[in-house]
Image (cartoon, rainbow, N blue to C red; front, side, top):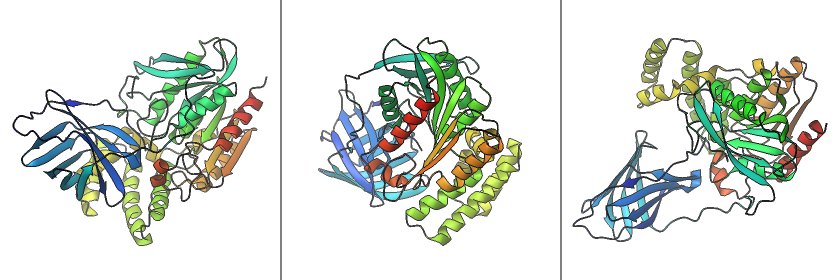
Length: 445
């Protein structure tokens, strides 16, 4: 789940002969709960137009086609594969929003939406040293951009590398209007621990192709970050903190790299990808009020597709079987579904069992989850993590479940992803304190 860093696109659209003022922000609601904000700014040559989805924490989504004339407003956003056509009136636009084969009524009214406050985000000046850095992954021929924070500009400190979750993430792991890695970095640096956080490949200032990469490619990026930190005289021990998929990646790197002194798995996975996705779907849909029968039907279809992935290595055969399968189960969007499930990342994730790697991890491990995490079930995953680590005879394993916390380690009500953006807190202070204390004990020498 994750937010894409997007630059605004300027659209050259003629305004001759229709001199109505539509500049400003316009807000509408999909399905009675999901707000969409249309931002329009007039220029000498046309308009600059973007979309926001405040309830999903997405801002600045580019609109690459936009027209405004006597027939109304029309726009298209390739970034989210959506189109809109509406009739313009002085203070409203009434029309239809289409995405993923669905068409929904959407009426915009003048006015924007105030984003929720994020009180944990640090304000300048910072009481520590921060440096923008670049390092290379020579194997992939890419350059990764990040921020290294040190308690002081000079000295010798233990360090952690922060590893983002699934989806395209910047160095702050920015999603749903939150910046979890900014909060973690700020807290740990104030506690005397250096932190390196960086933009995923192909995101923000990092180069490379994100869409063609798998979890193993991201693990290689982490090893490049380790190699970089080893060149810094200020750094002593190097540990890893991974969130969600990052908690899957950290053990992969630790199992094959003796330079990793410890790892912290924040909502990391311990069960195979197909099992995780089925559990995730059921838990989230249940929290959103979907009936048990509907959930069972959805996951029956999902399991059938996952099984095809697991039992086929050849892409040609795989595409043929998946296309036939989705048509058989009556899908109206089989082409889109096949394309999505055949992404290199998805194929690897569905098949990968983290327990096989966890058995090879011998450095200290802290694995934590929120008890209301619906994306990575704390019970199924933490038990398997502990079991695999102990089977591999790891002698320093700490497992902890936190009551009342969700996948982002926020204090929450239900744990549903729909709550994330509405919660002011970005990351539980209690978990921050526990992580810091655990690291300090293991880097005291």
